[in-house]
Length: 166
Image 1 (spheres, rainbow, N blue to C red):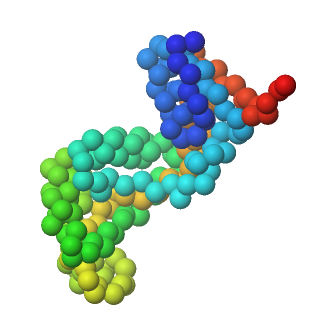
Image 2: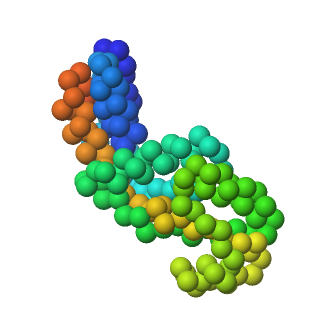
């Protein structure tokens, strides 16, 4: 084995698949069922509204992959961010970076944002909305990555016991 991956949630299974695609031999160690840890407890929200270029680019790649995977359950319902006055200037810079990188986020006044959801605008500096933000089906996506990993030569999934032997 070249690589050991701990856990067969979305991240572990996706990593195993991508590493095997690159010719590495991968051992995935899972103490329960795939998606049985934090993936199974996730609300499975996906968004590209971040303030760092690295996070934005990672989110764009992920969302693009989910959109191309019917079994991911990706639903682009959009995220509306309500931003307090004291954080508004920094948030605007983040949205400018998102837009420069091709994310379809938009800055809105609290009044304009009311078309997406009703809320009390008191204390807000502004809002942003991105139509490609949304959610996935965490279980289905994790199992799709497990399936893809298993179909790739070089991936072994091993369920391990957490009981100690004496």
